[in-house]
Image 1: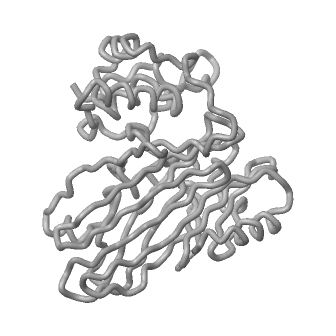
Image 2 (image 1 turned 90 degrees about the vertical axis):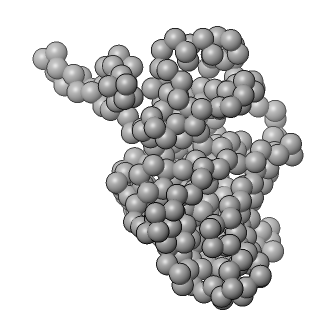
Length: 325
């Protein structure tokens, strides 16, 4: 049975219109055929804790993410592992910012969904705000890679890539979760190009590193990268406008509805700072130097949160950390 046929009004948000009428708000989900069932009990426990404790998924979203039947099967698993929202462990004081792999199931965008069909979770991590452990941004790193060959990689389905034109399907991957709290992923494309990302949470910021190796016989040029910071999960930052955003190469920042809090991201070297109001999202899109056969190039990225009124001083402080080196 298709997952869409299982939606019940009692299980999803709704709006009372008056005179007893109710408008059902169907959540944006990844289709059930794209679910990734855990292969072990340990993996099942991990993803359920991730979804229930931190992302606050409902049963419909859990089913879309990992393929369990929406009713008894999910309830039995949650009961077996004693997972419920009130059992979430408390965070250690002065711990690094919380970063988790994004589980999929729930679409990470509010709007422009037709521009990101079947989003792939292996490039996406959730970075949680220090002021609200239920608010997070989803960093898609990378969302896309262009080169002189054309659109060389895309972390969802939208415009054709050089692989979809050849009817080549890239296999699903997952983030490697390291004991030191870092995450990394890497992919080798059919033509020998390899790329990867490393996520390094600290107490004050999340550092990101990206690399690309040219495994082809020809020089790669025009290596533009699209890295997306999606704001759907960040409470107070979801207005579909660019009026709340600042672009100051390489920094791109957004303030909340009260103008008291900011989310800041940057990549070096930055090719294009911009924002998409419909998603809404932030971009500090970098560009790799031209890459000769056998050569590897590197990029560095930053994401942090700021509470205060002097954003200029905060950007100066960030720059003084030397994060680009």
